[in-house]
Image 1 (cartoon, rainbow, N blue to C red):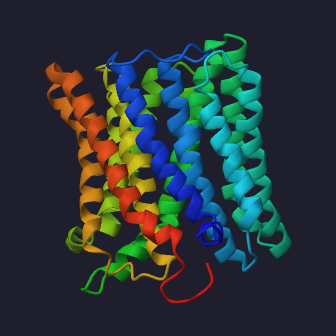
Image 2: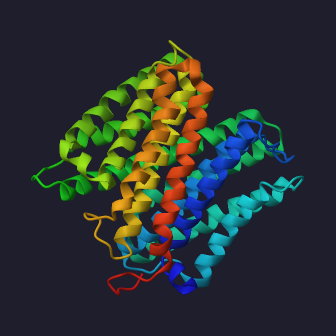
Length: 387
C-alpha cells in the first residue's frame, strides 16, 4: 500500500490536501465561533485560516497536480518513493508546526518556504531536462507563490501588516491565475469529450491575451495601488471578457456530467468574483464576498473537481462513467460556495448563519471526497499500468 501511495505525486498530496482541508475548516469554524480558543502563537486565527487554505491546502493540490502533469508533458518520471515522501513530510511538518503554541515562527517559515523551494526544483528539473521550456510559465507562478509566502512570514515576524496583506492577497491572485491558466488549457476539451451531442468549444486568441493582461493589471492594482474606482473598472472588464469566454464553452449538456459542471461552476464563481469586485466602490462589504467567490467558489471548487478527475483518470477509471457516489461531493462544494457568497449578498441579515452552514458543507464535501478517493489512491491502477 505504501509503495502504491508514493508512485505518483497526486496520490499522497491529494489525500493529504483533502484530510487537511476538512481539519483546517473544522478548526476555523471552532475558532470563529469561539468554541475553542486558538493556540497562542504569532499568528492570529484569521491569518492562520487565510494562510493555511492558500499555502497549505491549495499548495498541496498544486504540488500533486503539477508533478503528475509534468510527468505527462515530458515523459520523465517526477518525484516518487522516498523523495516524494520527504517532500510530503516537509509540507506536513509546516502545517503541524503552525499550531504549536509558542513555536519560533522562523522554524515554521524554514519548513514552509523549504517545501516551496523543493517543489519548484522538482517541477523545473524534468522540464529543463526535456527542453520543454514553454511550461516554465506555470513554474514562474509557483516561484512567485514562494515569494508571496516569504512576504507573509517576513510581515508576521516584523509586525508589518502591509507585508502580510501583500503576501496573502498575492497568494490568492497567483493561485487564481493558475486556475484560470489550467482552465483555459483543459476545460474546453473536457466539455467537448463529455457531452453526447457533437460540440466545439469556441476560443478566441484576442480574448486569451486580453484576460491575461488585464488580470495582471487587476492583481497589481489590488496589491500596490489604492485606486478603488480603477480597480473596479478593470474588474468589470474582466467580468465581461470571462463571461464571453465561458459562453463560448457552454452547452446545456454539461449538467448531466458532474465532473464537468463542477469545473464550469467554479469558473462561473470566478466571474461572479469579478462582478462583486466591480461593485465594491458602491458597497464596501462586497469586497469580502468577492474574495470568497474567488477562494471558495473558484479555487476551492476547481481544485476539488480536478482532484476527482485526475484521481479517477490516473488510477485507470473512466472519467466519463464515474462512480455514482461522486455527485454529492460536487453538490456539497457548490452549496458551500453559494452559502458563503451568493446567499449572504442577497440575505445579509443572517450572515453568521450562512457562514456556519457554508463551513459545514465544505467539511462534508471534503469528508465525502476523502472517503471516495482513499481506496483509489491507496490501491494500484485498475488497468494494471504503472502509476
